[in-house]
Amino acid sequence: MPTSIEHNVAYIAARVARHLERDLEEALRPEKIPVSTARVLALLADDQGRPMSELADAVLVDPPTMTKMIDRLVSQSLVFRAPDPDDRRRVLIFMAPRGEELWQRIAPAIARQQQRIEAAMGTADLNRLCRMLDDLTRA
Image (cartoon, rainbow, N blue to C red; front, side, top):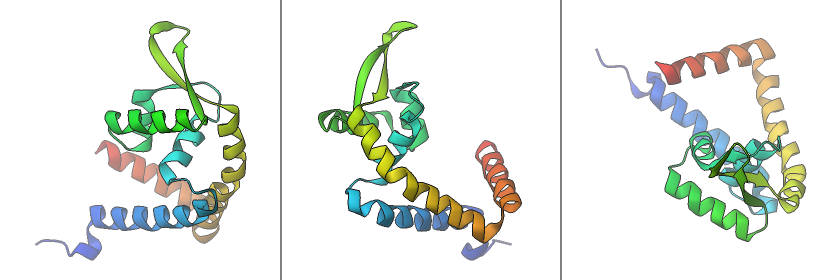
């Protein structure tokens, strides 16, 4: 017997993702940046540099879209490209000083969203949900 859409895991996950995305878009509105830019900056905040393929996977976009996004962020002086010191054929993306300044302004909004979710669910349930969702991506 088919499950109603309200009980369909894919539907529920999409609905939650849409809700959280809209919430974050609203929080980022004063900076006039999309959530995808915030995700790129969050990934680059560790100063390790990332290859384009890793960024595309993590930001949930295809490689050509990521290339266009990085081109735009480079033109805004938020990130820069540099050769990978371990493999000169590869290019890594790093956060530029202007990107770091932007990250410092938006990181609290991202942290507040996470804190609201944790307050609503509790730490243990949130951790369990994250593990379960990670497991679902591998199913």
